[in-house]
Each structure stands twice: as structure tokens, then as C-alpha cells.
Length: 471
Ligand code: SAM
Ligand code: SF4
Image (cartoon, rainbow, N blue to C red):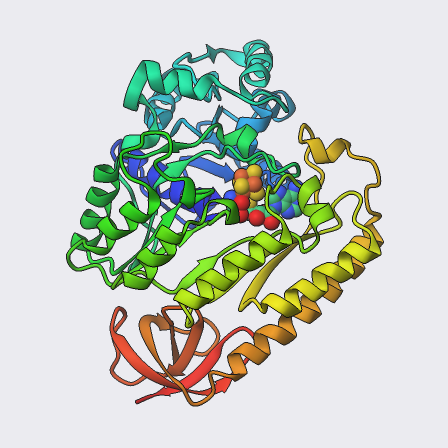
């Protein structure tokens, strides 16, 4: 299984692997030895899609050598492209959309027995479309296009949930987790926000929250298997529970914090418009809730924030950061930033740089705006030329890297609690772990075991990591 994209995709991949294990499949790193190859895809930026098309081409050769190999595409690009993928690359056997993890084993078994193509990307109906050969793939391509909306807001998901209850992926099934210590736990799927640049609401449908009992049960099961840390996942975790009304995100945090044996609880992502004082208080009063908030601002000028449909202003975001820092002075704050959004002027960009200097994030993921067909921003006038986008990205990264280095330099001499993860990838004599604020720390290994909590004195802070010694 090859997984591209965000943590939600990694988590979905673990669930697919869990489902496939129930019908006898296990994972291999050797593609040539595989009987089934799945690519769990991302389409949030064009580069992500380009990688996937490259891999699809590579797998054509494998499939020519081994015709019985089953090859499927899942995830966001599967949802977006549906049957067009098979029309373009007929060596793909099946395409399954983002709300179809529970269908995976049935589809794979069906292909094992009958061969033929399967495309199922219905976000919100129980309809399945089976076919033999390309003709049907073309029909399902058309159907997939209708169901995925292509730029229109979808409502089928709500209808589906109302009609079929938990027949989708919300209840949770078997999970084949990748890590040893840290478990991803999705608490909700989908997004209602329609930021004007973003494809996610179209390919993942409307927000659907899992029941709090299901989340708590999954966290407890992960702890029983030896996991010490969980990360609660959602496109906007702060709107958790708005659909079922049984618990909000602050309530859920408290419930997860109370699971016996859990050591650390993380969460992502927070939309600034929904991060309530109740959530901030829950983190402040929590025991295992880590002091790290990933709070994507996306941009630092009101003009662009409005065009992005982020529905907050720079002043409102600043106020939120002040409330977070008043309650949680030790908290690390990280963000996502997009440069080159249509209509971005030199003045907007200067405001963005000034905003970064003012807020001083611990770190930031920086992206070049990638037009996504069907989203409002793709059709906006004044698209920014590529060379300007690249120049601005470099300037932005230089400013942010300097801030990250300064913030880390201030940790020189402090003692940090680290959860030990294991040997460092680049230096076997050093082991790595993370602070509660999610900073990577390297230290010389003695007798520590993965999962130990140790105190490390910071001796050599750097931009991306901290080096220290055990105290
Ligand atoms: N739901 C999360 C949120 O709102 O912060 C993150 C979802 S998205 C997978 C992760 C990040 O990708 C976003 O925060 C945004 O910065 C970036 N992104 C989304 N669409 C983009 C686009 N069309 N071009 C460039 N970056 C994009
Ligand atoms: Fe995309 Fe905005 Fe939803 Fe995040 S909140 S997934 S950026 S639409």
C-alpha cells in the first residue's frame, strides 16, 4: 500500500490494511512480490496528483508481468477522478472513494473471483456500480462525476447518514496501525468549510462525527495494545459533534484524557473560527492533553483571508492567539501558509511577513497555491505568476526559519520531558523523542527504551530540532 497526503490518509490506510488483514492480506515493502497494490491518494495540490500518475505508470509494467495482480486506487484523487482513472489507465482494477473503506474487502474479493473493473465513489448513497471492461468504466466515470459534485456542494452524505446510519466508515473497523507508540484516531470525516482554494470538501463530503463512545473505545483499545499517545484527527476537530450534538470537542478531549493508561493526547487540525475558550480551558486543565496547537492561518492580510473564505480577520485570529497564550503560556503554535493566492499583491505579502513576525509560530508548513479545478479560487482573476510564487515562498520560509531558530534557541539550558521513540534516522548513536509541544529532540542513547518518558537538558537547539543530554 502506497499512501500519499495528510495524516487522515495515513489513518485511512491503516484502516484499509486492517480490513484487508481479515481476508488474508498482509503488507509488504516489495512491490514486485505483492498480489494487491493499493495507492491511497491525495489531490490537495497538483504535485500530489502528478506523483500518483507516475506510480500508476510504473505499476503498468508490474501488471504486464503478473496479470493476476490486483491494482486499486483509493482516497481523494479516486473520489475526484472516479472512472476517468480507469479510462486513462485500464490496468487499474478498481477505484474506491473516500467513504468506502468498509467496502474494500468485498470489492477485492469480487475482483479475485470475477475480475472486471469496479468504480464506487458514492459519497452518500449505498449504490454500487460493477462492470466488466472499459465500457462500464466509462459509464461509472460519468456516474462518479455526478456523485462527487465537481464544484458543487453535496448533500447526499447527510441523506445517506440519515437513511443508513452507521453503514459507512464512522463506526470503525479493524486497524493495522503503522507506529509502535503513537496511534491516529479519526474523530470525524469531511469538511463543511469550503475555503475557496480547497478541494477537500468536494472529495470528502460533509462533516460526520463519530460517536464519542466509539472514539473512547478505540483509544482504550490502542492503549491496551501498548500505544501511549493518540492523535485525534479531523479536518476541523473543533467542529466535532456539531452534527450529533452528543458531545463537543472539549467534552471529547476530557473523555479521552481520562482513558486509563494514556500518556499523551494530540489533535489536529483546528480551524481558527471554531476554537472555543472551552477547548482552551480543557487543554489547560487536562493532564495528558499536549500543549501544541496547529492553527492554520493560511494568510496574514484581511483582503486575502476574505477571498479565501476563511471567515476570520487578522484581528480575530490575533485575539484568539492572545487567549491561547494567556491560558497556555508554554504552548507551541504551528500553522499552514499559502503563498500566491489569486489577487495577492506585494502589499498583501508584506502584511503576511509582518504577521509572521508578530505571531512568531514555532514552525509552519508553507505551500504554493495550486489551482484545483472546480474550486472557486481556480476561476479567480489575477492568478500570480509561478516565478513570483516561488520568490515569495522562499522569502516566507527564510522569515519563518529565522523565527523557529530563535524560539528554539530560547530553550537552551531548559529541561524537557521527552517520550522516547527510538534510534534517530541519521545517527544511530542518537535516539529521538518529542516534547509535549511536539518538538523533535535528539540525545545520546544509554539504556532508554521506546516509550520511556525521560528528562532531557537542551544543549544545542537548531531550527528543526533540539539536541540535549539526559538529566
Ligand atoms: N483541514 C485542515 C485545515 O483547514 O487547516 C487542513 C487540510 S489541507 C489537507 C492541508 C493544507 O493544505 C491546508 O491547511 C492548506 O494550507 C493547504 N492547501 C489546501 N488547498 C491548497 C491549494 N489549493 N494549494 C496550496 N495549498 C493548499
Ligand atoms: Fe480545506 Fe478549509 Fe476544509 Fe481545511 S477547513 S479542509 S483548508 S476547506
